[in-house]
Image: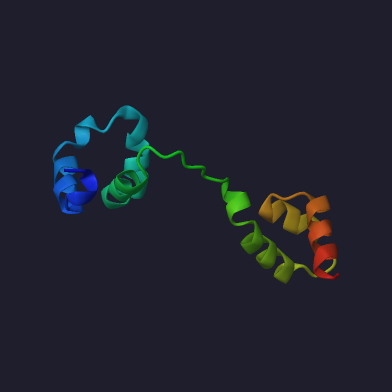
Length: 99
């Protein structure tokens, strides 16, 4: 019987009872996201290669929107410091927003 034919709860209980066998490489992720999220990640995507983008690239549009809302025309330097983004990038974003 394949794992897909077994109820998810069957495997979840086995995993909970044997957390010490998870492996050193994964304990940080397990502690960070919690057992249920870790279990679902492994159960549904185990064996797959998963690319996780950097925080900044994942949320670039959100950051850009917030930054542009705070832009006053004379605060590029302070926005650069606050968001950790170069003044040049901010100028480009402002230019794009006005086109």
